[in-house]
Amino acid sequence: MTTRLKLAPWIATIGLFVFWELVCRLFSIPEFVLPAPSQAMAALIEFWPAIWQNAFYTFWVTMVGFAMAVVFGLVLGLVTGASALVYSAIYPLLVGFNSIPKVAIVPVLVVWFGIGTIPAVLTAFTISFFPIVVNVATGLATLEPELRDVLRSLGARKVDILLKVGLPRSMPYFFASLKVAITLAFVGTVISETVAGNAGMGHLMLSASSSFRVPLVFAGLLVIAVMGVGMYAIFALAERRFVGWAFRGADAA
Amino acid sequence: MTPFVELDRVTMTYGGPDAGTPAVADASLTIGRGEFVAVVGPSGCGKSSLLKIVSGLMPTDSGTARVDGETVSGPLTMVGMAFQNATLLPWRTTLENVLLPLEVSRAHRRSFRRKRAEHEAAARSLLKTVGLDGYEDHAPHELSGGMQQRASLCRALIHSPDLLLLDEPFAALDAFTREELWGVLQDLWRERQFTVILVTHDLREAVYLADRVYVVSKRPGRIVYERPVPLPRPRTLESTFEQDFVDLVHRLRDHIGEVRAA
Image (cartoon, rainbow over all chains, first blue to last red):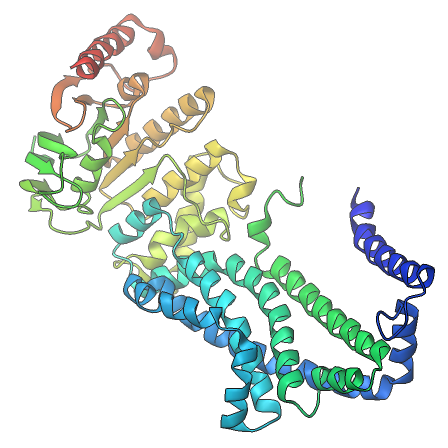
């Protein structure tokens, strides 16, 4: 059973690529419309130095924006989760801000900071902090009333309740949000690089598509997807490692 | 007998006096130091609210609550509490859960680190009394429901409270485990001599454990009947089949029936 579970994602992924390859060959789809995976792989190998350079750039820009989102999201989540007043005050603002398409902010960021790294970092940050805030705040708000009574009657300070009960309880929510946030951060970076960048995967793919090198565009998309899956896997491992207690029964089942 | 817990014509409404039907109306009771009192009544009758009033977690609309001679005006620190739900923290081991009150309570938090070894020894011996030796380092989800409830009792008692408030602590357990824990609780109480208020809807549980049983009416909760339980201690499961025990349970059952019909 476990081996089947472990094999399943590989089989599904390989199956998708085989299907894609077959469709392209069977219907002789031109490569400037939809390149087959083999053509994308060929482009990946051919342009590897450029792809590697830009992927590395996109990766660290994403990491910086994501790190900012983690710090900011955790702090804001703790504050909103701990205080009903702050929660009701800023929640509408947060939801409103999150509803704004981040692609619309990029030009403003460019006006403020110029084309390049800073708008990309900030786009990754603005797109990925929201799930962290919401999850941490939710985790804090789930303190059982009985337990709150126990702690109150002990004369526990708010800060003790927050650190010893609230924060640990919100950690599973926090780690779950990291998995969402990291993939969003990649989206943010690439958006910014596409709209207003002079480096990175977004920039590379934009240049490639404007010269009809569609296989290269798809090679870029695959690289971004691989980076996203890789980071997701790392945070999924960290989640198991740090908040394994929240997965009781999942292993036994 | 000097009263340890005293409610004097207490009325309490959730959300304040103008917020509708009171949860508790005009309730008076007196509990001596070291006494074990059970409060029984139909569900939703405000039994749990009595505990909130005594512990100072809920202010009264009128009347006074006194504990140990002092009028209750805010959360009391001399109480231990346990509920139907064990509310153990899943990321802490059993031992760490039992130690939590000492880490956060006003009286102990400053000296907790310094006295950690001492506290741990106390927690281990308490866990041993309830039959949880060997499970100190297990996570709560590795314990059965009955074992979690034992640990919850230990957490309620680790800071040696003078008053133990129990809100249907055994209600979620199967009958055999429940009866086993009656014995555990009785032993703890006989050994440590704290005062207990036990809220329950299990009449056999009330008669098995208590020195005195109060019956509370439907909402708004009034105390309608009081009955001493003169059965000898320690009581055993055998006692529950004796005629005196069965008669007492019957008498209480009749009162509950009247209260529910009223």
